[in-house]
Length: 84
Image (cartoon, rainbow, N blue to C red; front, side, top):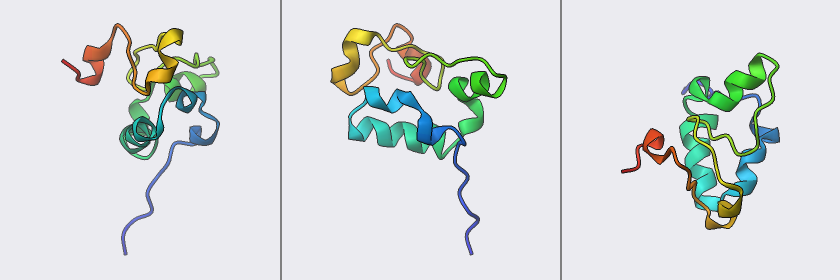
């Protein structure tokens, strides 16, 4: 029997998903929320009682408000996410 998959305790209330289309949501869910959520910058802030800005991405980059409709993060820290 496979072990039960762990999920970030903040995933249901995470406002970050309002910024993405369905495919991008799935990627972030797989990589962070249901994956290695222990490295999520949003979660780290919430665990110490600090607010996590809506546009803060799990790897620490930030979204620009006017890029909401594009479905992918277009921020100045794209290289942090592994994009070239």
